[in-house]
Length: 94
Image 1: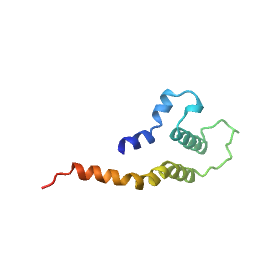
Image 2: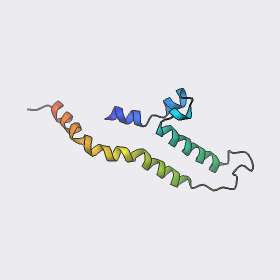
Image 3: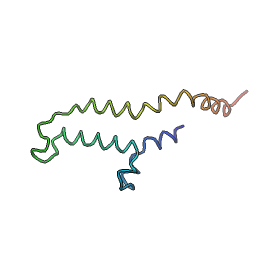
Image 4: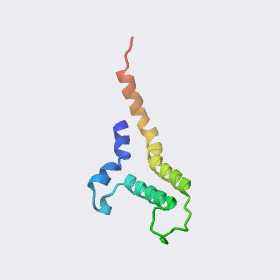
């Protein structure tokens, strides 16, 4: 399960190896959205190109967190019985 979470949260590989937008994973899209919002709100944009827009950065961070964690929360109850069985099988019994 931890390996699956590692693959689910991996956006770095897409940043390094994927050139086409059609092949980007969900996590990389979310990373892109978050970095664009942070860039605009910090003022690192060309003058006049959205300098007057005030974006809700905290709201965007919370929305990205929910989109990232949502599928894991909904999937975990179905996988939990296998996770507990694996722990109990490997436990030392006396």
